[in-house]
Length: 255
Image (cartoon, rainbow, N blue to C red; front, side, top):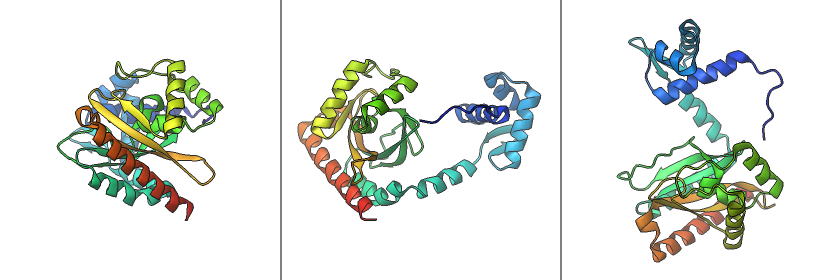
């Protein structure tokens, strides 16, 4: 877990607020950003002008939006991650073998589950996550798969920091219930998320570990509940998922 800065730089904190406002609002003017973060318009204008100069923000007809510089930076960071390099072709192949599912490769960062790669096999179904999306670990299939294989003290630290907020009425919000769920995940080797993140969507996930048993990330297959609930479909996807994880682990450890 990261430590809080002893003397945080206020300018960077304000910049993060400005960027966050643009992320939420899309294309907006100075006044709306100022209202969203409760800062003077003159201050917000200076930040937006500086970010535009740096190429991080684009100004069109007096309004601002985030620029593709963030996509460039994120892409570079992702390419440097060994797990992504090894898993990418396997994730693609698993998605191609599925009919109406989304395959997601996740890692944990600061107690949150982050989608490192997302491949959708059916473009007619719109999933509301993409590379770079963050999830609370307890309501993510991959997050639960990772938590189940973490030391108890690490799980406690993550829950102490982020809690167990609900996203749907299916989300686990009780620690004892979550611990029971994680024990079941350890016994079976896969985790299930049934409408805990999105109503009407189900996910089956498995952890990815190195040769020393250290958790590297998690791999998930998600799809419509009506399809994922079919026993033969679930069994087939579980086999394909575990086979894919095995290939990733072998290739990762053989680097």
